[in-house]
Image (cartoon, rainbow, N blue to C red; front, top):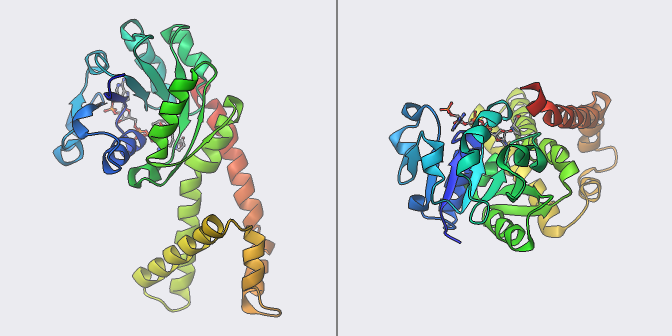
Length: 269
Ligand SMILES: NC(=O)C1=CN([C@@H]2O[C@H](COP(=O)(O)OP(=O)(O)OC[C@H]3O[C@@H](n4cnc5c(N)ncnc54)[C@H](OP(=O)(O)O)[C@@H]3O)[C@@H](O)[C@H]2O)C=CC1
Ligand SMILES: O=C(O)[C@@H]1CCC=N1
């Protein structure tokens, strides 16, 4: 298999993937082709070293892997455009498009095309993605190859395809949820006396420490919380106030709504 990768749709996630693969030395920029319709909107700095094209058919010509990274409502047109140029024996499709099944993609590209869905998040740009992958027809060799690709840029979990919209909400949208919680913490910090840049730095490192406690110690969040909450102390007072205001409930409801929405994006068009 050649090592050429073509990413159709070089927006937020397409570019993040390309940058992550280069940063972690999985690919050379010259082995990655990025496409978009409005090339003028891609700055020279962003495009540096990559092949860029506004012609999807030419761009996929010698690619071993074709990554679909356009919006769900833009996908049908792309699939119709590339359908007769895809070579199923030589080319593997990876789709990061939310709410579109492997079967939906094969309906346009043909039944003998192997399709793997991947749901990364934008931390892929720095090699810290949580990526879920699923397929209903890819062979073991291709699943292994795609697992290895995404493992160079973060952690990978293989899931059943019917859980892909849930993975979208928890992991891909999840980045935004955790970022907002860090922002909220920093705003609280400003109210209690810190300058904004100090408050943000403190909130970010505290969030990183909390995540690393779970990752490195393999412990449960409530076990770690119990270690912080002194009896009659200030932590439990703050935590309970947050819960009285619906903190966990708001997070859970948000994740459920995102999952619901993620499932309908392709059909909504
Ligand atoms: N953003 C995220 O964190 C994540 C997004 N996803 C999924 O990835 C997909 C892309 O999302 P995101 O990167 O945020 O979206 P963006 O809008 O940032 O990127 C979409 C890109 O597709 C390009 N595009 C549109 N039509 C075509 C076409 N016909 N041929 C080639 N390129 C085209 C657009 O450029 P132009 O208009 O110039 O053509 C744009 O660069 C979505 O399906 C989303 O659900 C999945 C995981 C995480
Ligand atoms: O918001 C969205 O629809 C996309 C999918 C997951 C992250 N961003």
